[in-house]
Image (cartoon, rainbow, N blue to C red):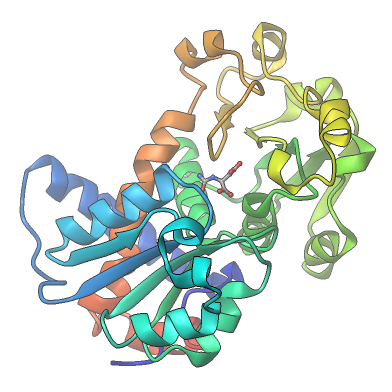
Length: 322
Ligand code: NCD
């Protein structure tokens, strides 16, 4: 087994690699619809080790593994149902799991935890969200969604709205947006939830133009992709601080009226009250299609990492190994 980990979207800053993943995800969807069985991961076992709650990420990873012929062992709440309750460290848990399985999908509440796990793991670790750090596989499916919905990513104006401070899906997405040409980014949030400097630097280092706003209204008519995030309640020091900003960024009928007819609205989900249910019926509401794409993108990723090694071996070794 090669030592390959998926920790950050910086490993995927390659148009060719992204395009290959998009095509493979398309193929996965076609094959699923035709009920064609894959066996490329037969004999492999995945552990999904989640220290934070998840619906889409865990179920889509597990379904992806099953659909590729592999098997899954899981703990859906590792803080409660693993030896962590007895005081075991993440490192020890990873060491042990590595003797039972072929790949570990890890979600943890600490930024940098996936890298910590990868350092001592003898099987690949896939970061399924590390605190306020990154969520690379979410960003891959987000980019795939933009590619499917818009046809082309170059030249788009992307408006990121909501909790830009704590939202790890935003942090990861920036690394992939900068790979494309002529992107303009609007950052919309209250001051308290502004994007940290370290992430703004990703944009400036890649000469991607961006503007910051506290309200979305003035940029809606120029937006191609409106990417909304949940205010991350679990990251706040106090409930009062959360309450002050929880309704900062709402998508409703008024938003729909100003948004171009060919724009799309994305959200990694879960939504709390950022998007009114009435918006769901609008064809521009892409968030449920986005969640569905997660299965195909995660199948594509697993296939590329463990199945068809020969396809892109050189690039993967260069880009995905740590
Ligand atoms: C996101 C996450 O966990 O970071 N959800 C997801 O994986 N689809 C976003 C969130 O929790 O708000």
